[in-house]
Length: 250
Ligand SMILES: N[C@@H](CCC(=O)N[C@@H](CS)C(=O)NCC(=O)O)C(=O)O
Image 1 (cartoon, rainbow, N blue to C red):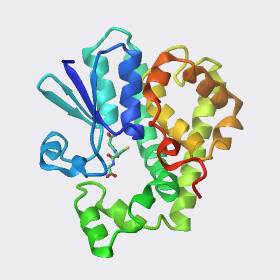
Image 2 (image 1 turned 180 degrees about the horizontal axis):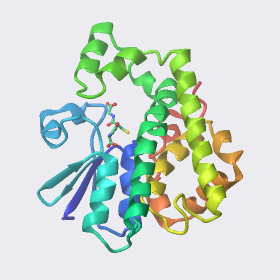
Image 3 (image 1 turned 90 degrees about the horizontal axis):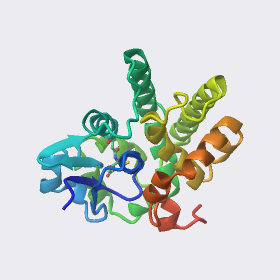
């Protein structure tokens, strides 16, 4: 049995961040799919591992690590082969600055069009009481589900999310153009690249790809990354929302 287990959903962008890094670093791991439909991520056994009731969770032997960006840094600290972090402390600070920015701006934003277009469908036929109970059972997503309220987010919240996705795309495109190198921080593929890629892949899957493809440096970055074996192993059949919900969703 692999020493490392990644508890994840195939389609979760936060899980995809970690899968990309594990594959890139050639770390053997077992992928354990948590059953969202049956709310396994809110079950007692899972909440003991991850009290936030979200995926991913990584276990390394007896150690339990949660939060996708924390997991990325943990893997860098412990599995130093195929390093994806600069050695220089100033560059490491820049790397963390990128991780925090991605967590603050595009990562929460991508949930809004994802739920509007596909994921809210899981709840549309649920009775109001059952929906409220479901929302309340989420330790860190109660207010998110209450705001979404079965039918999707308000026009205002959706517009804000699209604006955040657009400004993050611009920031990454500017960085790539400024240094003219292959990866977000320059020559080295760092953990910043897998931290952003799942958001970009999701944008494309949701039909928001113009924000990527109209920016030549970002388009080239996406196409370059998509050639890597780690990308192909991460985005297997069933890992995209359109694999589950179909391409023609309204
Ligand atoms: N900060 C956490 C966020 C994880 C997160 O939001 N995971 C989502 C999937 S991408 C989730 O598990 N959602 C459960 C739900 O909405 O019921 C991380 O980066 O790991």
